[in-house]
Length: 100
Image 1 (cartoon, one colour):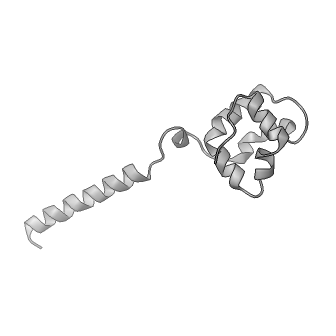
Image 2: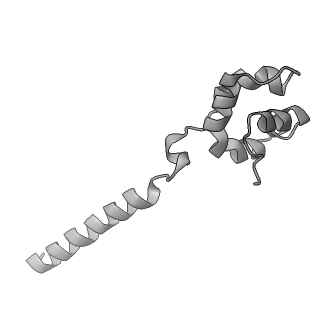
Image 3: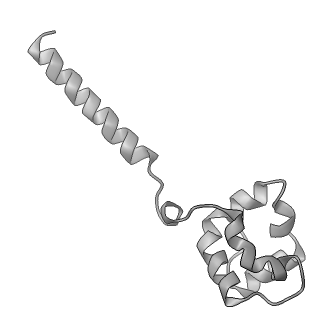
């Protein structure tokens, strides 16, 4: 291979790596949030029962806010997000209801 072709190939490969790294990285709050519904365990009493949400519950809801649409679309979780107690818990914790 000619030296000029090797340089062009190296530049193209470098740009491909840069685009993959920049394009594939999550941005904003989603970058710092790992979506895991088990993180909302402190909210079980408020969402499933009738107890008031705890400070720990509200803190976790705020951390998981970027994930709420994912949970609302999950057939196993959507009934909790969309339930009256789920909506009340979000409102009490001042976390907006997701508009997915």
